[in-house]
Length: 241
Image (tube, rainbow, N blue to C red; front, top):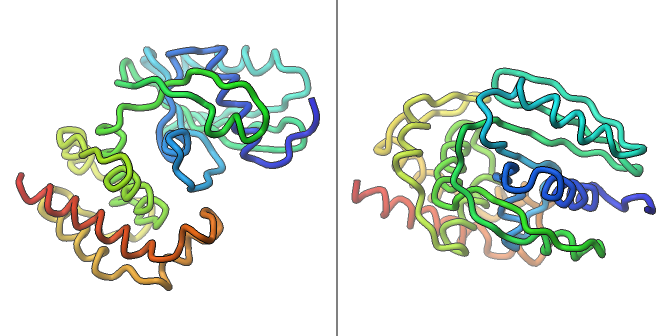
């Protein structure tokens, strides 16, 4: 195999490799799950949930064994209280994988084709997280870290995929909210609703330029208006509860 041309080509290989080696036990979530549903946003890592496992520590030897079988692939694995981090170097490119272990995770089948076909790779059937659950986790992640790319993903769930967040999961995440920086945290649906409306009203063309490295240029025109409209739709939805 020739060297990979970029990080995304390596990620496409990882997705197919994990699908072949771990099947339905490996569930993709986060930005890459949306990428597999034709989201235009570039992402340089993959978030996985592995089921059914009670701990990341018990999963680690299985991951190590499979990756060690790939000739020429270098990797390192670190465990922390939140995730298992895997750094992979293979065929001149590197990427990061984050893995959580859970006893169960609702998921659905999709194809790796939106990524694999870009690089002449065969398509595999892969599992991605249940959309309402993933939407709830994405809103909670934005609340905790306030990244613009999370707002773009929220827009994708609401306006493009037309799903609603799982409120039970969202409320559980809000109840045990954690911050990655100096975010003004919402801790219940009422304060989350207010925070969403505020950010929708403050979005403008200048702020949206932060997404320039992650999106095609054509996607940016009017994007602040589309995101704001989707966020106001979530505000209206949450107003019923």
